[in-house]
Amino acid sequence: MAKRFELIVFDWDGTLMDSAAAIVHAIQAASADLGLPVPADARARHVIGLGLVDALRHAVPELVEADYPKMVERYRYHYLAGDHELTLFDGTHALIESLHGKGHLLAVATGKSRKGLDRALGFSGLGAFFHATRCADESFSKPHPAMLHELMDELGVAPEACLMIGDTTHDLLMAKNAGVAGLAVSFGAHPAAQLLAEAPLACVHAPVELRAWLEANA
Image (cartoon, helix red, strand yellow):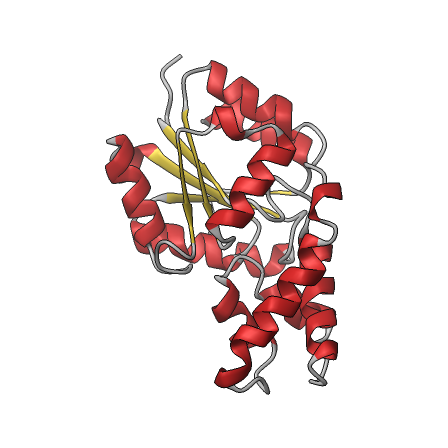
């Protein structure tokens, strides 16, 4: 059967890896370390998927710019203390392996740093399946379309043959801005109502539903 989407681009945190809670904790713990107001869970979850500096600017508006390096250092301290214990969502490894075996080009567009993504690809065992990856510290942060434009250019894929999958409105807005289709997953950082407001092709609510949707539609 012909593939509708030659290139499937995944967000990482909250889409492939069950890491949203760990990111929220790291933001909150770093805020406490610097004596700043600790953001509520919802505020901290909202910024997942953005580049780290953009995320901190929104999650901790009281943080003065001169203290960004301190905040970044404390965030990374708390996140990296446990990132090796984070796990992929159930069925994710099999899904990625299956899509790769069917001939799809696979990529990652993430708010993580290059160092952070490389660590995660190594821990997860998924690195060999992806044909290209982009991180927020080597491109523009979501929802700017640059990461998707760069991936499509690198892999020689037109926008109509590309699908972006993510758990945040930042992912879906990036897809819109790049002129590609977006698919939402509601088991990560942002609630389904917020995701549906961005009019994705669909919003799936469990990893098993993601695989079923892709098998039927991708």
